[in-house]
Image (tube, rainbow, N blue to C red):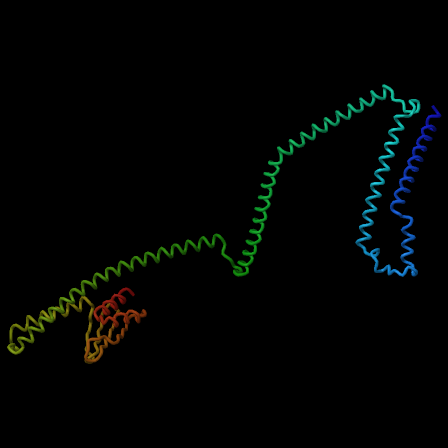
Length: 354
């Protein structure tokens, strides 16, 4: 038992020596073919001054050629190494087969059984590992859609959170700008609600006043319309009366009894017009100017001066006193249409409404 290790060591040394000799012989053959030993001598000969060759301009200085040669030699050496390893393995395999049974390692039944047990355990572990791997693949295929869905939800929540955060920042900036634009004191919620209620109450009162003014305006329009009808009727009666007076002027004497009823009728018509319109005085200042005074209310007197173009019935200007509001647009409209009665009615309506 003590001599076996030394024998095995000697055999191993012989195999290593034999492999080295084989490698040396193969190297000598390759070196003979590649001329590796003669190349330095040729290189030095080419580089000498006696050769007369310009080595700097030759192809041996071309990097591409040198690189190609280097790649070719590297590949050849790799093939040579592989052949050496292959040859060494074959040699060891052949020696282990053809060697004496006494020199070969003894493999007992116990070793075989132990190897079988070890292989069985490794197979069981391999099978369990394959089962776990299959379960892992199945879990991956099953859980991948769920994980993707959760990832999409999480990404949507993150995006929404980023948007909300940006909105919060924008709102804070707007709030800061509003605070800078509207300094203290600011309205509170209670003050704003009270102010809104006061404005609503004020709007309701203004609406009631507007409605009352509309009703009064409608009533005034109806009164003016009735007065215009009576005025036109009085004008027609006056024209008829003037016509009769002109026709019978030559035949009528001062003591004619027909004059008294006619005078009374004319006076009554004129008084009716004055009562309807509130006319207090009417004065013809000149040939083209008429001054009228109307009693709108008990203590309110409105004076209207109408100026016409000379020798025409075209209204030129109007002067009104007793009305505080601006009447330029109203008078300009009626002056353009040459509507004196409409102008007087509109001025009296404005005076009564004010």
